[in-house]
Length: 491
Ligand code: HEM
Image (cartoon, rainbow, N blue to C red; front, side, top):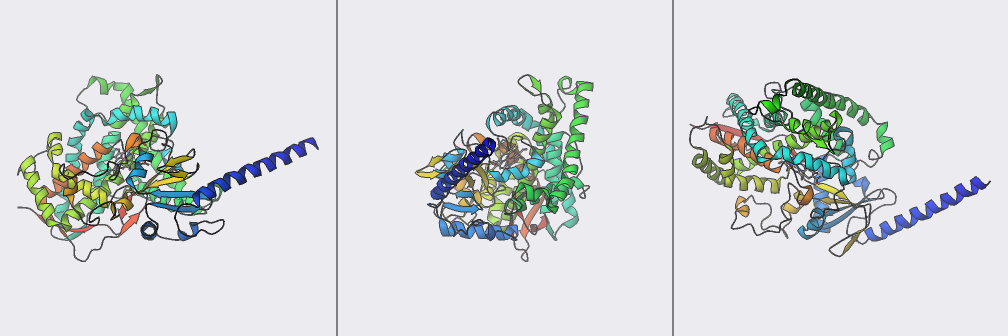
């Protein structure tokens, strides 16, 4: 009987705690603008059964209607999209608000709790060991790899010269060749063998993560466990993890056998080699720790740059005057010899191309939105955000906001010239900002400059008048039906 009374008291205490917690959360949240919520589901039903391109339209419309603090309830889970740079600064600039939002949990089966997802001390340690992998000396040796795979891409274009082709697919394969060689030190020849299971698995896995994040039912762990999506995920993970495991094991063996990396200074250091030689509190990283980081490089480092390059080419085709200016800069910096290899200095000197890429990432940010979870009640410029809220930061929505940018939908690279760039430091955040910004930002810029400049040295790009760009709002922003362009060989 005593046990029964104890359990009963505990039950009512828990119920009272849950009620007060929920009421506090609900009362704080109800002050924020957003569409009408219905009991139990909140706003979740708006997204059920919608395609990623439709989700983008819905959120864009809501953002226009409700402004720069948009509150949605996914069941009882509050999600607030912040788009004013002052609010974004409070979140991204904080070294305390670094916990990722719930949506990232849908990626942990694949990416574990590596750098992208980790929080607290674990994140700090991982950031410390990963940062040296992006040192300028390491990036310098990658320029040759960028150039080699860009040259293969350009060579393959000869087959479709003068015709309209979807450049997105071959760019994805080029970026995959680059990331495999730089992250893992292996050549997978994706551009020669486009039917790779690994390539398909990477893409499908990020589609699944997005589809799950907007599905009210599948967000629930138990329902998900028994879903057909989970069964598909398990099959994909076998391919993805199997691939990286094999590479890590053979690379570690090679390292032990030959001590090759320390003796032969000329050998290129892949990110994986840097991790194999790293320690946390004096201990080397386990294969599992390393796999998490390599998988994150593979995920973050290839889809993001593929989209960036494809959207950049699309804009260059759409704005011939911009393309002409970029081409003239390339001739000035690299010279007229189309076969000459580029150097790190060349790439750094392509300043106008850099502005073009920044403007591309403004309108088409490869990571259209990212999020943080508030682990305590936080005041953001006078707004009390209750603990447990997921905060979304949306560079995609910020770029289209006429109160933030002049002529927001126009492609104007000059916005980023040093004379013009007087904008708020947290207004243009495609690589995020603050302590958790993108560790691969310099790598990505160099890769995108290398591939785009190689293409422009060899081809003039024109739009296909029948083609209409449709955007897919997934974890990574992609073109739904590719990017069709005409490539005209330069004399
Ligand atoms: C156009 C290219 C890229 C864009 C737009 C981009 C964007 C971003 C953004 C927005 C974040 C923050 C995400 C968040 O807060 O959840 C991020 C984080 C990260 N990115 Fe990138 N990224 C790009 C390329 C790369 C590349 C090439 C690599 C590696 C080779 C990379 C590695 C990472 C890693 C490891 C993180 C996690 C950093 C941390 O949490 O401390 N990214 N990236």
